[in-house]
Amino acid sequence: MDIKNISKKQRILIALGVIPILLIGLYFANGQGHNLDFSSSEKSSSIQKANEDMVNEDFRYVEITGQVLSPGVYEISRSLMVIELIELAGGLTEFADLETVHKDISLSGIVEDRQKIYIPALPDYKNGSKNIVGPMGSDNSSKININTATL
Image (cartoon, rainbow, N blue to C red; front, side, top):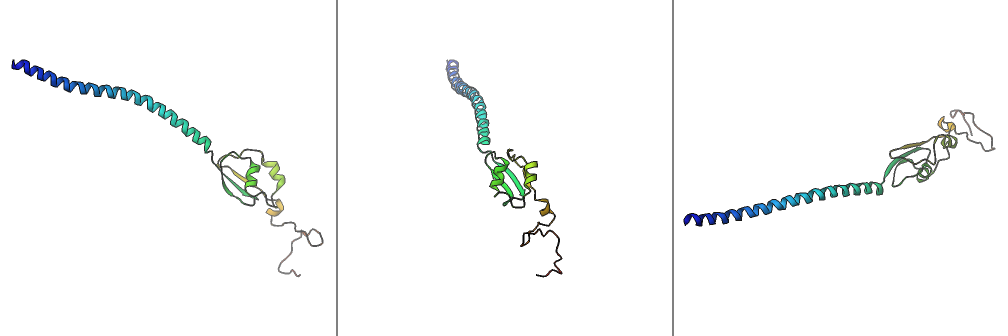
């Protein structure tokens, strides 16, 4: 009789030990399946969100130098044409070489990220003489020796 009683107790103990182990196993088996599906959908949604952020925050850094009123690096949040960037930089100076600008720079082109745009100066301004017009309207393009000049 003692063996039958011990057997029942052992059966009950074994059942009480096995049932929680089976339940925990089923929980993790189902949980892992859900986690795999969830993580893959989470990854795809996070990738989609990252792509949306890249589209929404399309910041570009461009540099414009040379004959503009405010040369420097500009952070722009959308695609700009070169002419719009020039206007953003205050416009061209009076010494900008418009012929070269129109010939060599596509004003309707879209500015790219980290692009540098140089606005050249007039050839006379680069060489140091500015073709100053005198008081009578005469072209005073000859050089003056400042050591011997008088008023």
